[in-house]
Image (cartoon, rainbow over all chains, first blue to last red; front, side, top):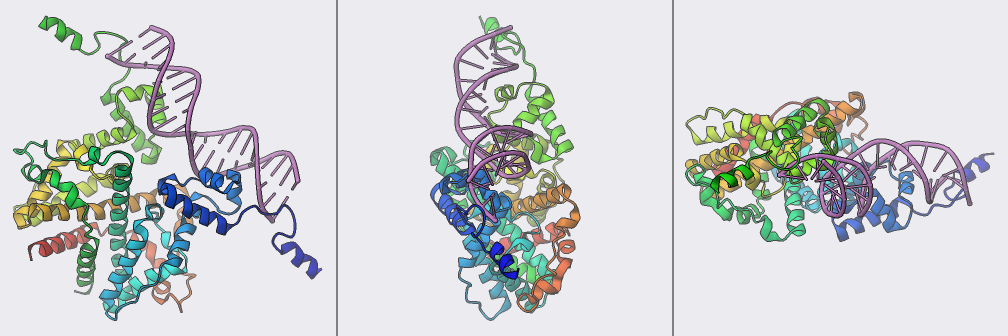
Length: 228
Length: 228
DNA sequence: ACCTGAACACCGTTCAAGT
DNA sequence: ACCTGAACACCGTTCAAGT
């Protein structure tokens, strides 16, 4: 009887054979995102890409959120863990910079992870980053709860930066860039003198990447406040 | 002849009479959001609420994005302009805190405004806040372009904070709060010592409002860096 | 066990036709 | 000038039935 139970539990031994797998689904999803952009990832398109019925996907992922979380986890697994400096402050900055760069081209991941409790859905690789950041703050002199504040504040900034830039880029790609080179030129200089003076220099300035500098400001400020 | 042209331009004088108006649409949208939540605002539901065909709305708003932008502008019109302190730093902080509080219950607004070029779509009231912030940075000693950095960095943080909190709240409301009181309790303490130590204290800590403190840190750090 | 099509309950948006 | 229903091109998800 044990033999029988084992046989029944072996995959693919009984019933209709699988036409796909978790691995194939995730690979197809990444291909779809790379080719068509993250906003085109839908359950139906993904199924069509693989060549299966849309409803079949629900035997391998709980729902679309779950799919994206699995995608993020798989992606983070492949991100090399950075070499960490000795000082706690440096460790926090390196860990965040790595997360930011990894997620920068994955706004769908950032969007899903706007949900609170996202930490509980992350895999070991992503948790390693979280542990590194929290431990860095504690090593610096924060209490564990202050370390939560540090983590959370930088998370807000990071997710905001990624989402704004993602929406900017997708719009620019959609329509001609010229249409969205918004300008403050037409503004009434008597009522909005500074904005009018900046005029159409805004877009170029806003396209500069200042994440690293602002990250350093946030880390320094948060650590200083917690340990003062 | 001038009389004739004037008569023809008078609203409601010719053709089928309007069944609704921009003002009624915006009022109904606000009611819908207040009653059912911002994630339930759809063109079709809004039309049903007013009692008109969904397609009729398109004679009064360009598309859904435009509707939300108009909603935000109308909302900001009603937000009282705060009394501003004399020092530039204080002006920046008061302006941001006011925007944050206004938008905190309007995540749909924050979402739409993740699109770059959002400044160009804002009305006079919202632009007044932007001008106040940029002018504050310039008065402090920043160049106009550095003031753009200041504005943009805090915008990222603010929008991230609002979106994360919005998604948290809507989930908590949907399902029983217990299901989403995520815990780091089950984590392996040997691999994630700090996270495991925090355990289920995380949600309570993360629900604290630390926006004002982090705002001050950002403003001070950004101004210091720009003028150093 | 696993897969499937049909179906449900929605979206935003366009457009020819009507008043 | 304004409104309308029908239609287009989609979504995520459930579920009874099939292999």
